[in-house]
Length: 179
Image (cartoon, rainbow, N blue to C red; front, top):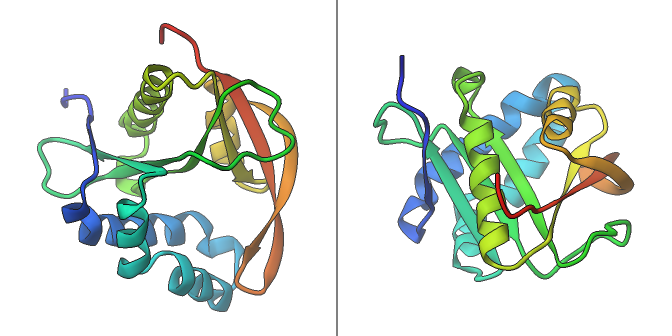
């Protein structure tokens, strides 16, 4: 039996490995359902080393990294963001879970759950009472994962991937005292 995932906050020194993981997991998740041009455009605009470094430097963002089996490189990550809330989010004191991605080879090993528990704990300790997110309406695996964690769909918003206008479902759940 393997050890449970180790979760820790990302630092600016993690920008390179986070950038590699972010691009790989994004492409693994969405490439089969989107054009290569749209995927390349999104990666070029949103997942470059400079963009990741800028996001790490922004105090509105908190990144969590997941590691398995004492590996040097992360196998998953989450990004929490303060300061923005979709109008359809109804819960009080909301915090956004902007990203949660797990490397394909680590799916089924508890990485997603460990990142979600850590995200909820950070939200709870900081006094947030609602965790919300946007998820592509065609990402069935992620939607099922979020529903298992108690998220409910409360709305939707547009998301532009390259030249393709898509729809994200807005989901939220209460942050509770005990997990």
